[in-house]
Image (cartoon, rainbow, N blue to C red):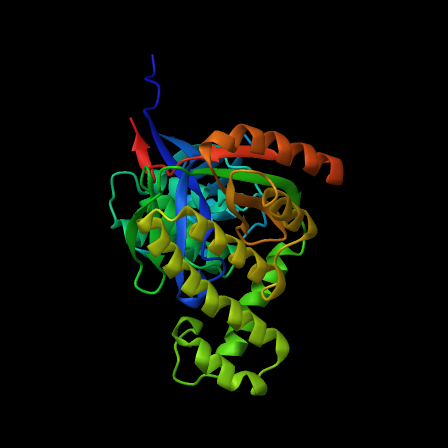
Length: 367
């Protein structure tokens, strides 16, 4: 009787970004946490020389011959996130073995909670198997897959948070040096995420536009490698020569980096009101200067700020839908959830999904 194939199980979490939005591809600062929802990949050996993919979230089996992967082009399906990773693993000189990857993700797609990064990182661990790469290289490998194969010009925050997440701690990530500092979340606050249940179609194209607009702004500062290196004073002195849109994008990025640094100080001091204030300032900047919010997200933030026990609220993720992240006094969380749900339903005829997240551990093999 044939022995059942040995199955190895890998998990990578999604993430919520507390503050520092659209700064990662400008070599700036971000502060995400890894979260309890994520992507699980169970990998087993197969005889046929291919990578076979199945998913609980998507119907049908997808198969890719091993000898075709190095030269394959994207398919336009969810499998691109996995096969982009497979191509990057080959490029590093590792061998891919015939495998079946059974995928199950609990990260809601389109929510801004990094379902793609969770899929990339868990798949990378599964395809690498016993081959080990440094954790930062794992994050970079997955970022390259998304940038160069899928075609989304993302920064490294999502993949890095999925790899390096820590229980009970946020990650203050320097996206240039790809190093981080662990930041405790003060007692007296709970992280509550509210899913607007909408994702407007212009999200991906607008993301690419924002990347280009930031580069356009940077062109006014020769010798500066990234907007992170431009001071507010330098921006103000150059403002008259800049077009309105690149100026607004640069203003957001420069001030957002400062907000992340101030948020770090406030978190270390346990100053929840200041943390909340900075979150709201971040949202208003994303709403007006970066223009990546939408009416549903704005209404969730505006409503949250009228509810007792809320320190701060902001959109999180790329924008144009997805989620808000809220810092709430634990004694008020139940009432907050009831109130925000009722008022959102009344306004938009949609029931928001609500999650309570604590910072969670990063990607790992599950025994």
